[in-house]
Length: 252
Ligand SMILES: [Zn+2]
Ligand SMILES: [Zn+2]
Image 1: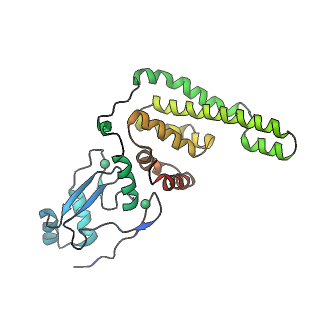
Image 2 (image 1 turned 45 degrees about the vertical axis):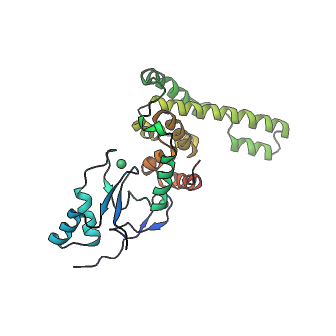
Image 3 (image 1 turned 120 degrees about the horizontal axis):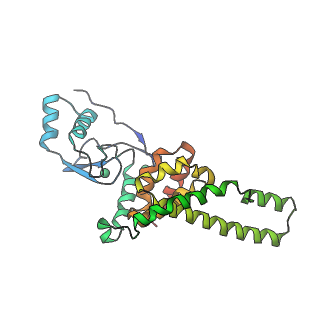
């Protein structure tokens, strides 16, 4: 029987290193195997017969035993697999997500979107057309505005006015992006965001705006939405999202 060296993992959310639990801690009667995408868990007792049997019959311990246990678990009700590394999320991050989930209103399990999805769907092409139309209007952006100001091309008063209207225009655009996200099937939103290069257009923070919009029609908290979707974005975007998630980790 070989004693395996504890596996160290970098948390996918906060980047801290952690060691997945391969069994109950000293003095603990059981341990949890978390779902790899939500925060459901299965408690496995120290003397769980399957665990004991696998160790006994196959002569496996540590990680090998843990893997065998996971293979025997049916998928979580969310459709993902249970996994000893909780889908690459450290215990601290899991705890944050759990805490946030607990803070949901009590009726959120039976959450019903307040919107009529059929009617929402009809709006989708309109919203999208608006969003995509924003790229080629040639309107001045914040950086250009700052440059102009610093070059002395505009005076402070005009600068402030333009900043105001820029903010107004931007917040309207973000609202349209949010509304557009709400017209889509929630599971398809982030793929559509990728498809239309919205992160390039609006920056990473648009994902946060979208997640908070989705909270309103799915009942799922922002942190939970982002932690599920983060994997599909490129490294730079992931890094920025992680910074955000670390900041809000303590709850809203
Ligand atoms: Zn973490
Ligand atoms: Zn799950």
